[in-house]
Amino acid sequence: MPSLNKVSLLSAASLVVVAALVGGTPGWKFTTKGHSGILALEAVVVSPTLVLMFDRATDDPLHTADGKVAWGALWNLETNEPTAVKLQTDSFCASGSILSNGTMVSVGGNVPAAEDLWLTNATDGMTALRLFGPCTDPAGVNCTVFEDINTVHLAENRWYPTTIRISDGSLMIIGGTHELTTFYNTDPANTYEFFPSKDGGVPRHSPLLARTVNVNLFPRAFALPDGKVFILANNQSIIYDIENDMETLLPDLPNGQRVSNPFDGTAQLLPLYPPSYTPTILACGGSNKSDVTPISELSSQDPALAQCSRITLTPEGIERGWELDSLPQGRMLPEMIPLPNGQILIINGGQTGYAAYSSVGFRTEAEVGNSNADHPAFTPILYTPWAPLGSRMSQEGLPATDIARMYHSTVSLTPQGNIWLAGSNPNANTTVFPPGVPGYSTEFRVETLDPPYMELPRPILSDVPQKIAFNENFTIGIDIPEGASTSSIQVALVDLGFSTHAFHASARVVFMNSNLSDDGKELTITAPPNNRVYPPGPAYIFVTVADGTLTSQGAHVMVGTGGNPPVADQGVRL
Ligand SMILES: *[C@@H]1O[C@H](CO)[C@@H](O)[C@H](O)[C@H]1NC(C)=O
Ligand SMILES: *[C@@H]1O[C@H](CO)[C@@H](O)[C@H](O)[C@H]1NC(C)=O
Ligand SMILES: *[C@@H]1O[C@H](CO)[C@@H](O)[C@H](O)[C@H]1NC(C)=O
Ligand SMILES: *[C@@H]1O[C@H](CO)[C@@H](O)[C@H](O)[C@H]1NC(C)=O
Ligand SMILES: *[C@@H]1O[C@H](CO)[C@@H](O)[C@H](O)[C@H]1NC(C)=O
Ligand SMILES: *[C@@H]1O[C@H](CO)[C@@H](O)[C@H](O)[C@H]1NC(C)=O
Ligand SMILES: *[C@@H]1O[C@H](CO)[C@@H](O)[C@H](O)[C@H]1NC(C)=O
Ligand SMILES: *[C@@H]1O[C@H](CO)[C@@H](O)[C@H](O)[C@H]1NC(C)=O
Image (cartoon, rainbow, N blue to C red; front, side, top):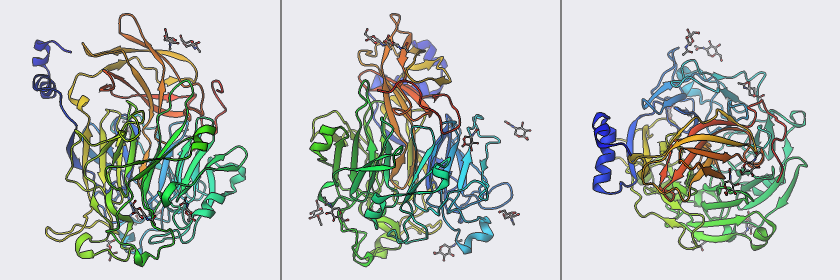
């Protein structure tokens, strides 16, 4: 804690700290930050200061240097301003993740709407791969998206696919649809493919996806600590062995719970802890409607499911099956953000209806405009994985926002340690409903959800290596606020993930053992044992002290060799 006369020399921000210390502990709060320039339909933190956003190629306000309408932009976390990024192909409802060499790849997309071409000059993005970075300029100067659809592209059209980084640092691309569809998956891409490609570029058939149409868009998938992949589509889940192209069936989600698009609940791999790194999956919300319900019989007012299902992926855990829990209220289109202290934030979405827009039968347009969902969930939920069943969910002390984050909204933990929120657009293009006219307007307001530690003295990390190898010890400097308890220091290696359609792809928290030096100024940390526990690539190290309450800013590191994928196994196998 700085001494008082030092504080008097510091900025207004520090005065808040003093005020907070005098006035008691600050709480969580929402803060509005500015205008995103384009609708943030997809968002990914691409550097310590930048978030890359993608929209449909349509009629966004921001323009690129050539005078065309932009549908890609970088959000600067320091200045709170967007800068247009030139794209060629339409990134509408794409996905993405970051490779082992730090290059972000945006995957798939759509055929641009004819009426928008004069504005955007966009081309067909159904097989697109858009490469960005790594970007080292803090403001993103000269950081561009590379696209050459003739030479770098998917094997198959994919709109609404899922993309995750796997243990060799490549991307696994799961499912999607071949054509524009208004709701259900009517022309499914029931396959997996990889980038860089495997199998000579021939997609692999997925029995799981074939079993789970109509509700198998944006499957929820996680790279497991043994190198296999968990995939959840509709109400069915599997463990997929990439090396042997084999699926192992897991029990269905209970009670007809369905969580993939267009019945968007969400799912998250819970934080992994040494020494066992036992994986547990949490799936929440969505709908229990039959997956063949005629669209005309669905309503924006149908209650979303409050059910959460959790399974531990050990032989005993699978034998026990899914353990049921309940959200404080049903949620459609929520997203889960694993936090550096091991808790999970559940945020965004509505309490009724479905994903997509202008499609379900009973939309009561007079109430919700084009939206298929309604009754925004304005208050986030904190989920504590280690608390006893029945007391894991809490909304106590969490504020309500007044900005609805419905379909096509995004959220991410930032390197600064707060939560960034943007987007929401259940409309075909940018739409503003006049005051008094019901409907969900295109949302350009960016806001943050600030944990209490944003206004308190926090641990400060220094001398963090730029690159860390698996299964090795490394030492960093740390300045711990005076008086903060260090009896339970938590060191988290965090993949901030990629946000699209109520799924935070590749998001991951892996805890690392550490020891504080006797003088309290150095922390010796043991990196994850291998590239299966943390798929090689960029990460942020956050240190939390004071019993889970004071978290540092995240320090950017490259985990593994930083080589181009596919990379060889590294570290030691468990
Ligand atoms: C916006 O969407 C509406 C409804 O689909 C369409 O009629 C209009 O042409 C679109 N405008 C632009 C600029 O894309
Ligand atoms: C439209 O994009 C193509 C490349 O896809 C480019 O060659 C052409 O110059 C662009 N036209 C305009 C009017 O921007
Ligand atoms: C960006 O590119 C221009 C033109 O190549 C160059 O003059 C400038 O120095 C670059 N700026 C940065 C920050 O890299
Ligand atoms: C999962 O959904 C299928 C229909 O898609 C249904 O046949 C099956 O009974 C459901 N499983 C459970 C456990 O509800
Ligand atoms: C869906 O869930 C609701 C709330 O839990 C329950 O009342 C309803 O019976 C369920 N419907 C089906 C078809 O399982
Ligand atoms: C890292 O430190 C731990 C504890 O001191 C030790 O057991 C382990 O062998 C070290 N690992 C390496 C690779 O040096
Ligand atoms: C930290 O100390 C504990 C107990 O002294 C030891 O078991 C552990 O291996 C040490 N870890 C590191 C990274 O030095
Ligand atoms: C990262 O790897 C991909 C796939 O091999 C490659 O296309 C891209 O150019 C690489 N990025 C860098 C910065 O080398």
